Amino acid sequence: MKYVDEYRNGALARAIAAAIAAEVRPDRTYAFMEFCGGHTHAISRYGIEDLLPANLRMIHGPGCPVCVLPVGRIDDAIALARQPGVTLCTYADLMRVPASKGASLLKAKAAGADVRMIYSPLDAVRIAEAEPERQVVFFAIGFETTTPPTAVALKAAEAKGLGNFSIFCNHVLTPVAMRAILDTPAAEGEPPIAIEGFVGPAHVSTIIGMEPYREFAENDRKPVVIAGFEPLDVMQAILMLVRQVNEQRSEVENQYIRAVTQAGNETAQTLCDEVFEIREDFEWRGLGVLAASALKLRDKYARFDAEKRFAITTVHADDNPACECGAILRGQKKPAECKLFGTVCTPDTPMGSCMVSSEGACAAHWTYGRFREHQAKRQSAS
Ligand code: SF4
Image (cartoon, rainbow, N blue to C red; front, side, top):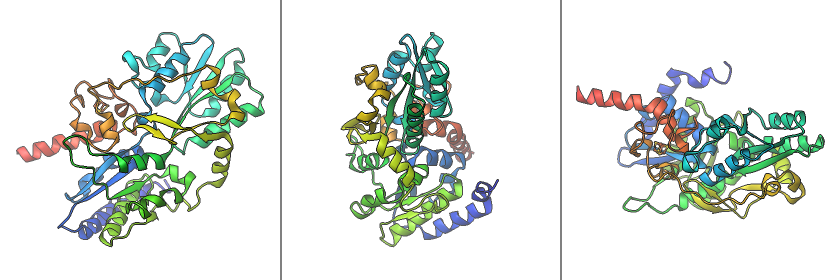
């Protein structure tokens, strides 16, 4: 398939791996964070870490929209779905995210709540149009990639004059999360996370472009290389980061030139700016409450705002205390360091959001990484 097969070419992968190995200096270590869950997934799926030198470490970042949604917001969505006359529309991977007291949207649906899985926000608009007696709420989550489709859905509902459609808005902002990661103090008894550069988001950057990452390169001296989601994209981005570090450069570079431009998608940016404004603050799983880190509907669209229509007041709810999702999302721990990983917590019985979404580090590691670990153990034992 065009733009897929050529980015999964094994011979090219080996050539890039050889270039990385040749350029990595043996007298130092390297640590890069891949911000996106899509990159985490690619790294696990294609065994990219196995192709990297031992002194180059990849750290998983918080760029999985399902993973960073705090428990309190899932509780809100479940409470909404349980209201008589309400239909809650959501993406499938939110259905099984554990909420307070063992609840989930899937369990609420099984108990009779009208929760429907959709593929696009416009599906929710169509449901609202077809069922005017229902109050249809779209549970909107995601980074800058999924924000424009939510805005499009709102405009479609407005054009159709729908009075029974609203949005429970949970859209969050990538650069603020990157800033939070860089400013995260070391966990008690642990060394600080020494991130030397970022593999920058792919899809997010098609919308926001390259400019928002400049502060990390210029002020923090952390290079950013925006990369696509195929294995050769990720490997080339790692090579570009190694070169920047070796040459003591700190720039925003674009590996994903087939989709990302300097300015991003200005049409989408204008639409989003018209529909959304920045919240004062927002809670993230793992990162805490971050100022100016999420979006809400502008007052002129208040009639589409589910938080206003249903008087939602989010209450903080604690994560499962045994779940290490928070530390994993901050890059402080790896999935296998959680005591529940692969025992109590598997994709069939997720105890935390990182095991639910395919972009979650625990799910990616469970699906692909655990086999390699067992293999390595077997080989070292024989
Ligand atoms: S393995 Fe499960 S419980 Fe442990 S951090 Fe991951 S999602 Fe949380």
